[in-house]
Image 1 (cartoon, rainbow, N blue to C red):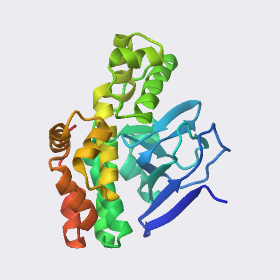
Image 2: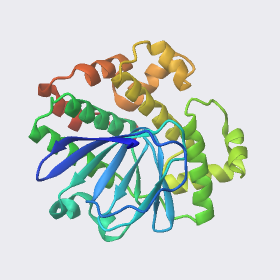
Image 3: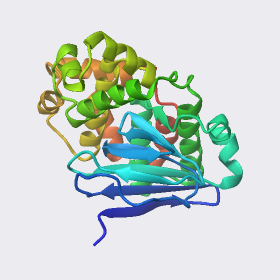
Length: 287
C-alpha cells in the first residue's frame, strides 16, 4: 500500500504542479531517488529530511527545497504525522530562467519562505484544488512565486558542518512544536550549545532569527488550519502558542497584511476572477 497520495493539480507544457500527502511514519532515510525534472517543493504542513550530496536539509512550511534534475537524494521522516507538500516542476528549457545561478552553481538547496509567500502558495493550491485557476493564472502565479523565492535575497552565509548541524537541530525542535513558549536558554540546552552561540549559527545557517522562524511556522500552520475549515480563531490562537487572540491577529496583519478571518474567507471561497491579485500581488510584510 502506498504511503503517499499524489495528485496532479495542474499540467501544461510549461509547468506541472503536484500535491503530495504523505503518511509515512517516523523513520530514517529511504531508498535512493532521482531521475526527476527540476522542481521546487513547498510544504503545506509537517516536514521531512532531504539528504543530498552529503548535506541534510529540513523541508518545512518555512523552508522550500530545490531539486535539480540529475541529482540523487534520499528522504527521511523525522516527525510523526506525515507531511503535505506542493511540487512545482518547470519544463527543462525554462529552468535556467526561473532558477538561475542556483542551478549553475549547485548552491544551497534550501530557501526560506516568508509568511506572505506561504499564503500565496496555499491560495494557489486551494484555487487549483477547486478548479478555479485558469491556465494563465496558474502559470503566472506559480512562476512569480518561484522567482520571488529564488531571487528575493542573498542565500545564507556558509558555515561549518558542526554549526549547521546545531542549527538544523534547533530547526527540528521548533518544527516539532511551534506552539512551545520556551525561551532561548531552554532551546539551546536541548540543542547542546550556549544560547548566544545558537542565535549566531542559526542566523548564519538560515538567514533569519529563531523567533522569525518560529513565527513563520506558526502562521503557516494557521493558514493550513484556516484553509481546512478552522472556525474558532481564539482557540486556534491558543493552540498555536500566541498569548491571546489579539496577539495572533496582530502577527497575522503584520506579516500578511490581512486578518485571520479575511484569510479564511479567501482561502475557502475565492473565485477565479479574484485569484490573480491574491496570488501574485499578496503583501510581503515579513521580508
